[in-house]
Length: 323
Image 1 (tube, rainbow, N blue to C red):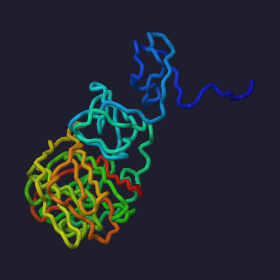
Image 2 (cartoon, helix red, strand yellow):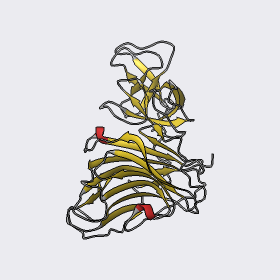
Image 3 (cartoon, rainbow, N blue to C red):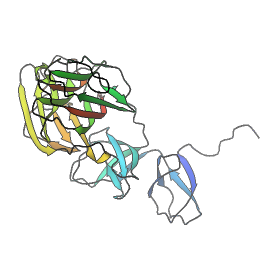
Image 4 (cartoon, rainbow, N blue to C red):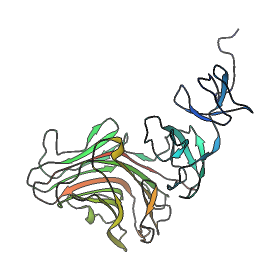
């Protein structure tokens, strides 16, 4: 016998059934991946169950949320359906969405177990620029602090203007069909109205005021308020920070995460989503007149005073495509 002999295809995984299984059932396998039970009949406890781990499958989808082509998909364990994020203790990564899916759709197509790789910019691991304005403080104000895969931007009670930012070194063209995905936890909301936090697409940064950045589409948080706003500027058209009517809950736990997407595949009509729901569909955010290139930006500032705030960025990534 040779040292390695073919047994079966890599996408044909066999495991001993720990419970009664039904055909086409979705389960998380021992290696953490998603498996779809194959065959024409189910399996009983102790049977060798055969799972498919590659391919495109039509799956149940949570209603009330939307999906963008190529986005991340997660299996919601209590719902037995696809969600846009892992929100329960037994939810797991499922793959990538194929095609867009509307809020009312009850199914979507998932290319299962496709890697999360494929982002042109991913600031959990890629290089960034940061130029703080203000007095550095040990364990507080200064350049963003990396903890695990997250970046923390923080202001201190020092009575002065402060600004800290995180801007991707890698940039992309305005017409590169970029989609930005960001996840934020507002650990401590700005203690007063002098604080502003912005995250999104921009052609640069500012040492004092994100509003001054000449080309941008930004998700905007005002200190002392839980309202989520959106603003844009492309050198011709400016849209001031506009309330989405969505809010966040401050805190450091998983339930405090707010996920936002900026879909700039149509630069003349950029679409914005908060927790997989499109917001401000009647407002036209534009970057079609922008020169670019654009980057991914997180920006925290206060104009004066002793106001504080801490904002944690769990994800800030951009994917782009020719199609």
